[in-house]
Image (tube, rainbow, N blue to C red):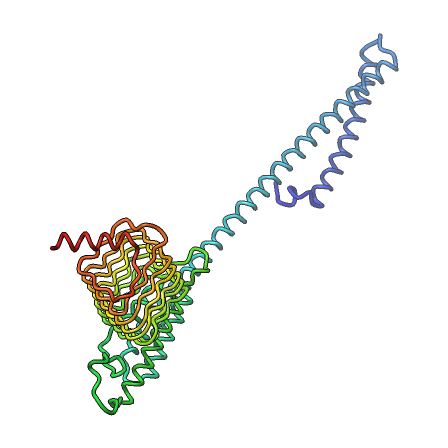
Length: 382
């Protein structure tokens, strides 16, 4: 059957009209032949009986034609449904092919973009070693822009910027007071000042890439700043993972107020030339301040320490304020030198306190139970 037949075109309508005419003609012939035959060969048949029998025979012919026509219509409908189903299958196959083609195109686009990002990253890292400070600053901004547009680069970019800050750097403004020469302040080379400003840019970009505590479910990034020289380091209201800042030197105020640290925080043997502000900060793992030296007052009021706090051997020239704090672990103050005194008032009893060889200036405020612990330890040492 042709497609024109399946779609009930003009040739089909002509065939139906011709078939109907032939059926009517055949029915008339059957009617006449049956009636005439009965009248000729059956003497008992009357004219009415012959006509009735002829009409039944003619009706049978018409009924047979109707059955044939209905069967043909059924087959045509089945064929049409098969064609529609096949067309739908072809459309689905075409859609699947288009979808796969689009997926391949997206993968190719992503691959090209990743390759461009990798080349951009490699080029920026290479430019960090350029002699011109403006080129280095531009490379830092390129890295930060890459981290903002591709979040999976953020930790890598932070590592690179931290690595830049860990480069050897010796600037007179970070010199300890007892090492300053008498008389006129030392002259500073222009290239050293330009490098200081470039490092300030790296430090600022690091802080901007860290999430704030107001963000829902913020990502956690680690910082490795070992032996870095930092100026006005400000992590206020930021969320950070692990911080490794061994033997660092901090100039001006270092601000950790309201910051949340999800990993260990290490400042062992670091020097703070300015204040430490850590009010309402939250340390969810160990805090290590062992061996640090501070020259200005430090404020840890309302801080929360979930685990151990290591303050062993620290040396503080000015007063420490640690009021209304919560300690979730042990506090180690062994061999600490608090020349400026300390005001330490925990909001709840501390699980374990270690106070061997603690030296605190007069006027220091410690919990009464800590004083008894210190006295007991002194007696044990004696």
